[in-house]
Length: 255
Image 1 (tube, one colour):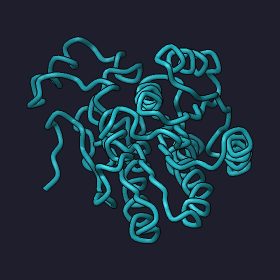
Image 2 (cartoon, one colour; image 1 turned 135 degrees about the horizontal axis):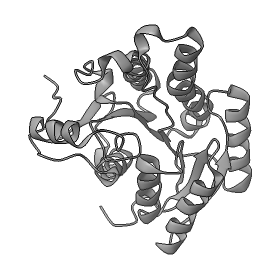
Image 3 (cartoon, one colour; image 1 turned 180 degrees about the vertical axis):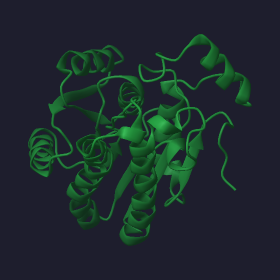
């Protein structure tokens, strides 16, 4: 693979304003893709992602949409298509979690988490797939979580809705890979504990416990997930579809 193996392709990364999403945006831009950076509310952070892409010599733009809304998702795709052309590479990264006690979780919180994490993935894939099928080429990576494979033994009481939504994303991706092949490759990435804003509220003792329980003896970084995502979107992964790729430093493994 060359450094700019995605040159000429249009990529959309949802939830691209910070953390894992920002790292993925920058990695795809370095590979030559023109990157549409989706955000919902943090326009400043999305702009910072774009500034970093441009500083690296890449190209892209920012697009606001709440992906839990099919109408807003459709409008975002229309704007990207009008500005740059159809989306060739899709990364569904937008997601939310609740860190309150889910045992007493209100129904509206359950619905909000499922609407962003699962419906948001569905809306973007469904909007992208028709054009990808017509062109005979498309590549999709859905960001899930190890909590979609195994319930958290650290915060299980706080992650019922989140873990359920990510399990559903994994199942959705597997089914789409079968339905859309051979034109579209669909894979899932299931990150483990990644050093982002979502994990920095942990106590030092808890962080150390996780590190000691992880064979790699560290938290992951957003760049770890970005590199795997780039690979799955590249030509080198041409025979890989319908799979869930765990990046957890060995904390969770697949049979």
